[in-house]
Image (tube, rainbow, N blue to C red; front, side, top):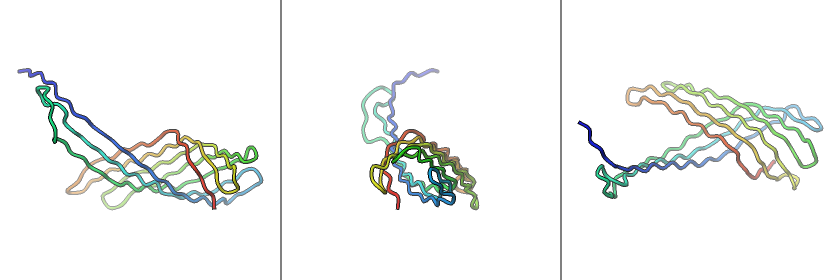
Amino acid sequence: THYQTRGTVRASVDVDSYEAYYIWWAAAHDTWSLGPRMGLVWYRIDLGLTAKLDANGAPVSGIGDSAAADLPTPTIGGSWRWDFAPKWRLNADAGYFPLNMSDIDGDVYHARLGVEWFPWQHSGFLLDYTMDRVKVDVQESQLKGTLDFNDEGVRVGYIHCF
């Protein structure tokens, strides 16, 4: 038997990310530098699911649920910088971090390519394309699952160097 319905469900996703990192320029020359990079990207993920119309198409309210989670993601790798003009820099970062603890098996990948403009001595602005990927498998007695999270795109920001 086939029953036709017209239910509507609304899903929402909100992701906030905060990043801090440190680069030690092990090889520093007049126009370029190369060194190891360590950092942390902190994600705050909010998910929601709400029913708007029931199976007969009638409006409903109060039916839904939401969940929130924090996802701290370490980033370890290398960084390269080239000062191609006064106050302008081209940057590239890449990194990998394995997450292998007891029943958790995963990988974190990080890549970034961007340009920076420093109108002041220690402060400036950046425009870059960043890709972070977190893939984690959990196999515990009470919890089994996979998280495959990709965060990528163009970003604009402020940068301060100490």
